Length: 359
Image (tube, rainbow, N blue to C red; front, side, top):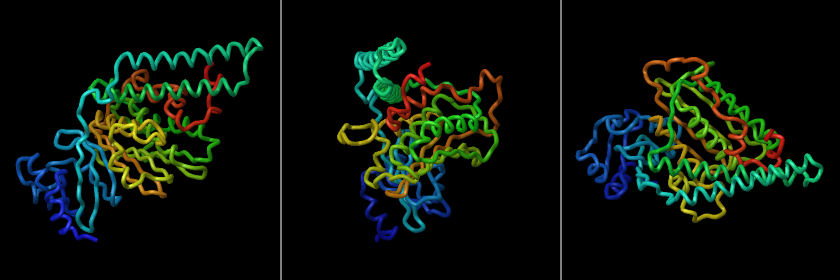
């Protein structure tokens, strides 16, 4: 086991930017040459908060991964503690525009395919009413494939727009306790036969903030999907919402399989298509980080193999409480059952789909 002093010697010549700070005082005790080159000065001895957001510091866990804006650039930050010293390992995320290499023609082709599946399902449904239709199971399978394809389209579109800085962002005053409660109820309803317990707790009876409710819902559904892909019957997924100082804190905890240590540092990277057996399309956490950053927030991930994962999203709420507008201007949930069916299509089985939700 290396001491903190030994690690500093080793890390002094590493090209990756590394910052070491005292866990108690949060004073910077070490930066390597890469950090000095970025800052154009040596910040040793100064408070960490002068050069990097202290939202990245979580005293409740030893080693974790977070995504935030560092030195004006989007980055993934690995945090490793060694006794009284903690080290931040910074990986700047690719800034190449339209990095997924999508074209309008490709998107239109995918949308046409999705609508073709939907139209086929609708025809089966209509024929069934006329007494000449296949059983409900194949109809449900068609609907399931439609929503799965639609989910992929939404994810690709969101990632593409985030990469170009064009993702629609419409913040309004929103009751987040109600949004989270209703969203969790919807997820729990569809997961009732999976054996996974879904719950939500809030430290306040009402917590109103100016956010984009559609994007917050997209972020939370993505986190739910990520957890549900790695849990088994008897496991639990717990969403909580609290206010800590001037920050909103969403926390999603599960006791599932966890994320392997070697994969944790790459969770915010765009998918490269190398692992064809990997669950999901690899865009969920990357998009969640982008949505958190649109709200000027950070996203932290702590995971241990075999013990589960905790994801925290911390958003600044500002010094003054968000104004409350008329009900029509303060949506709590912005979409319907189809939003949950789409976002969790990689988790749900076909029995969750079918004509019963299309009326």
